[in-house]
Length: 342
Image 1 (tube, one colour):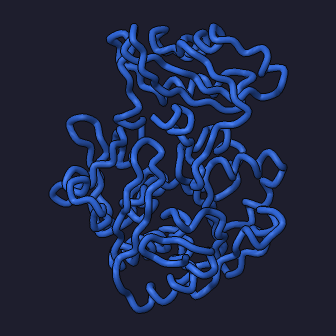
Image 2 (tube, rainbow, N blue to C red; image 1 turned 180 degrees about the horizontal axis):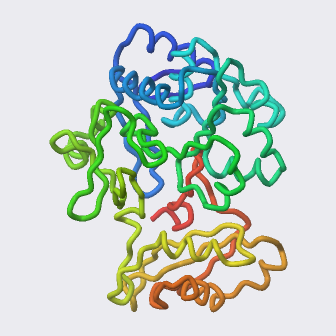
């Protein structure tokens, strides 16, 4: 069934609804969040917030253009591509209509050409030797997760825009650390990032959840960060810190150390309940090849954390080797799948 409350259906059919909704207005759309770290929520997004977000985005990028639709339209990132395309009067290029993502990128229409992807999609294109395609774009938006430095290095001559946002802010509302026009940021006393402005959602379908997340016009993101020289730097999430043996362990820092180890293609550090320690750090690791799959040991991963300048007490106490990290449709790591749905 195709509809906008919640958003569902084939991208082409949803685009037809979006065109009418952008032009004529109407009831808010509803996006069902992924629930990567908790229970999914229905996010209510108004027409006014949509216009504020999309117009501020296009102004920052340099104007309307043609877009690649390569993310699920049931998520705010994919839906935003449809909205921006509707404002430009150009139907997007649907990746599913083409034999490959490179072929779809070549087909993007317009005087200005854009693509919005998650790091996983970009990584796979870089591995396939398709980096030249990105140079033909006026901007490559990358969001949904942190962008590794080696990826930025590989895209040094590409116009990359790192976006930060979430369903509750109509998608990316901070570009390369700088908020879009009308968006305000502040850091609360706990180090949490707060966002205000016309791009904010109306609330959740659940009134209690809305009251907890929206206070005095500010949305509490649960992300930790700092603002340096006017730019936001996200350092992790409030739920990305576990207490193991009385020590606070910031999991993003451990993840970064693991990803820097030779023989590791991808990794993530998560917390698990432990009777002795309260919580233990578990390293979920994707080895670079079959040889590494047999050879990577827990003590190597623990050494890698210490060699990265982090305390030994932050090191993982368990390692799980995988062929790939499970991903949600939007490209984020599916933590619930890794942790058995807990």
